[in-house]
Image (cartoon, rainbow, N blue to C red):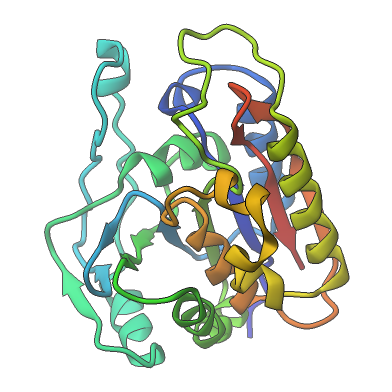
Length: 258
């Protein structure tokens, strides 16, 4: 049996972080170096959000540039990690829901913008699991729980989104912006609940009030956190290896459990 791999959630923020040398990209690199080396990565990215559950099963997933309006050098980035069809089939067997073996998607920027700093050699197999937009938060947490055995098989379960993600209030243009009070309050509350191991309010996040509704106007960037929490075990230590709020309203918080 392999060493149990921690579970990790990263706030990936602006796609340009894939190219930038900043506190966040340096933090991702340090996180990759600090983790036990996984045999594969299972990524749950905010950017594969569709009606249904699918897992990439191709041998060589393509690099998807799922954005617009950025410099040509960002579109030139390739992250040529191999896939792992056997792991994709194992994920399908573990999950208590119908799962499509997908041969078309690949690795979107929620995955590769972070992994190119964590594992720059792109020599660790990577598969992606989609987020079913038709299902409630409890469903996603339950799927995370079903993925727990993968940790003992050397697989890094990586959620990529943002605890706070409100682009309507984001300061575009690259200018520094003070974090909104509601963003700070919500992120602080999330951190408190994580340290306490109290997942129920995090699953039922609308019950956390107006700050939650401003921080999570749409669910896709928050839901990867629920997979990570589901895959964690009671009593495991929680750490925050990357911190900060970008543009006033996008949390760059990274969470390591285990």
